[in-house]
Image (cartoon, rainbow, N blue to C red):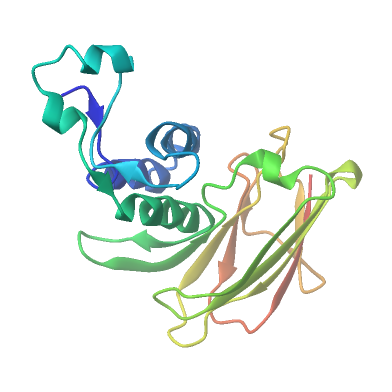
Length: 204
């Protein structure tokens, strides 16, 4: 009671991401980094209590509140970061839907003018995926080069491109052609999963 657990709380955080509650996921992710990990070792304890440390010295439950370090806590942080950028969409429990979600939980600030995101051959259920994102939001656009997985092609790729100021998407081009399958307010673009290379220009 009154504590955080690095491992058993992971599913709760990921459920926020898959429900599209990105702000809640990011709050939890950054709180995890700031509160649950030691600054020098990037490891956390199995259970971290959410109140001032002087109260721990007066508690009758000293052992669980001073629990041993949990080595996998740093791996949980990396797993959450991976899911933030690339994640397989969930289907019924224990399965995938067949869709791949890209930049699902990416903070909008990561796409400020001049910033870039690069993902090279990241393993997924469908095979390795590569992604290069370059922000030119001062000119109202973001460019994305995407190499979808080919080992087990996914049915659909859902690419989220958040604008730093929350502006909706106005137009999309894919490989030089106008593309209409996008949701402006959700900043979401739906793309085929069986392509070799997709060069995407997003205009805001």
